[in-house]
Image 1 (cartoon, rainbow, N blue to C red):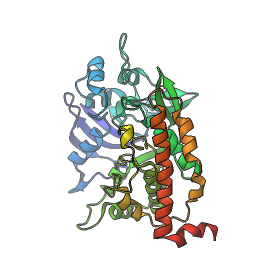
Image 2 (tube, one colour):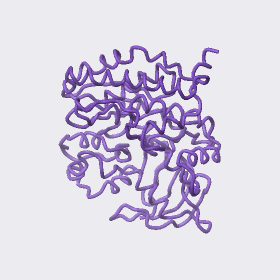
Image 3 (cartoon, rainbow, N blue to C red):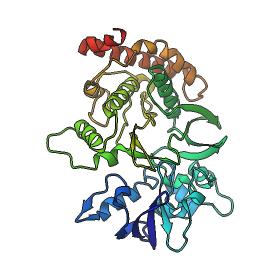
Image 4 (tube, rainbow, N blue to C red):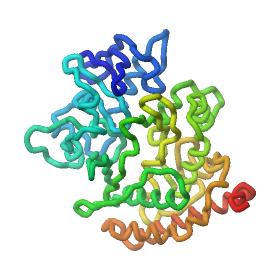
Length: 392
């Protein structure tokens, strides 16, 4: 079927999507090269179909999503790709969408930032059994990540509700800890709170993308150019940001690496950080606030194995935090004394959870305190003049 790839009200490309597989089968015409999704390779004056199809497929719920197979059966869908056109490919992360040649509609009438949407798909993804016909007009069709999640509208705000993994369901609590750390260190972030449904903790975060902005992942940013042989992924990413004109990215990456070190985050991949731009002018506004930090704090380790180490595994630029923290170029903006008592605050965050017993709570609180001390020790030994320059 023929569709027009749109960016808000601007036609970008005429394409065909296979109705059986849900993939981009052909690019018929390019109408606005400037507004093609970031990172789409241009080959012989045309957008690379494989790259565009990868971008389109990347909007779908990933196959790794917990409970996806059961949810697809309930939705009578064979593939998450087939859900995309049911909501015009609309997302709450950017302003791209697909307008059908058979059903032309206007962005103002369908976008999820200004219009209500169905919570049917999100509820099914959380295990609900649908009653009657399911309304597939939902931003949950274009949400990424492997944990169960759903979009809701609360007090007029678009909020993402995300669960944790059994049997501890610790990830939502880690998001609250990350929020506390970044608040103390004055680091731009998406704040998370915790609610409980049927005894399980869920994190809630208001959408930081608006109807006038696009979130562009680091994955697409680093795809604007081929990484030179011998160059690190860290250097390549910053070079791509500089080439695009994204401001203050080195400082923002510094902040992200410090936070990830403190939390022993092991899943900072190229799709959960990036930059924000104006959807009107395409001007780059800067790094995205830090978000999606739940896969941290030994969430999948038995209590007896919670042992903070400098070589705890990490992503995306190095395989261990001991090596990745060395990439931070300036520690002077971090007042690490602000972390005093963070273990006590974490204890209060953990207390309401029925899945975290006293022994685990004690181990986790000790771990975050230890990691803060480890970071201060590293900073003092590696760059004392930079650390203390904040007081100069």
